[in-house]
Image (tube, rainbow, N blue to C red; front, top):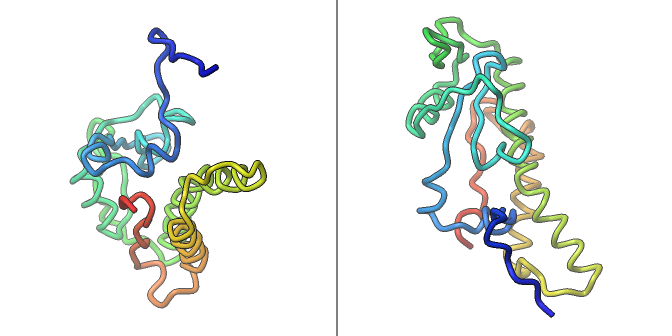
Amino acid sequence: MEAKPNPSKPQVPTLREILLAPAAARQEEQFYYSPSRRGFFSSRLHASVGLPEDKIEITREEHAALVGSGKEIEPGPGGRPRISTRVATVEEKANWKRQERDAALRATDGLVARHNDEQLLQATDTLNPVQLKQLLQYRQALRDLPKAPGFPDIVLPPNPVAGGH
């Protein structure tokens, strides 16, 4: 007998639903900056672990411009993020890029774990073989990033599964 959803209980989306969400749903993602942690947070990636109490909402465009600047971000007036006039060292930029890479890997950990569980249980696979191969290649590309020419001044590859495949 199939369990009926409880209307009083909020439905939490699965990782698969988040990763395979249409572009319109991904547009609803909110970005935040935490002055105390001096870092960015995403409603999609960090909601399950909790957002910092001092979070300040920023637009997707602000986030892209700040992260894409390749410069250190610091809290400005009111704690809002701004580009620092100090130039980050290569080591600092490498650490930031590794943190960004690690977050991208963590964002796909659940999908890989679910696939492994489905294989062990001989259940229907969430990902088809092409999607699984693309996802595993993506994860390996992320792991190889520090060896790539131009690191850390490079852009992370796009997640093929989140891209609607």
